[in-house]
Image 1 (cartoon, rainbow, N blue to C red):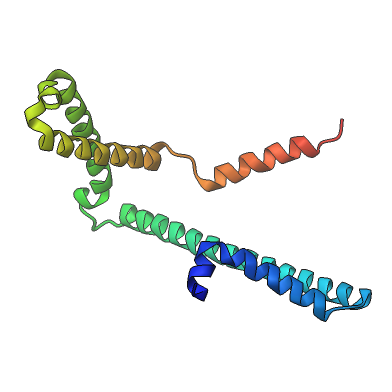
Image 2: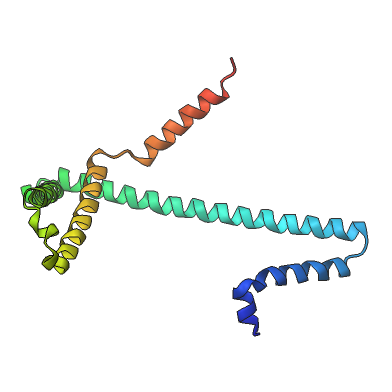
Length: 168
């Protein structure tokens, strides 16, 4: 059995166990074991620190992206040379997506023979796929216009923590 096969078939646990056994054989005194444990804990803490730094960097990139989108929106709305279509295109698309989605739902409810006819198997799959896409689109439209921001979620979390930490 090759190394790759062992690794992907549960051999990783055996490798870790054999490394642990080898370290136990190499480290004999309590001081050496304590030093090794401290080094392992230090390495683990360093790993966690680096992971936190990466998470912070990722959050900063996300926030820059959000800020850039907000700045673009403000620039378009405040630009005197922008056309009515340019200023309202996202609203028009949101209205069109909502109307299209509800029209499709209404059509399927009223004209139910499309989905119930066994001869329309491929058509049924296509209609269900389109409904899924439209439902996801409608969810995104509602989230954009009525959704809560991450700042609001952070504020709610901070208020909840303040109440938990408050002493009676």
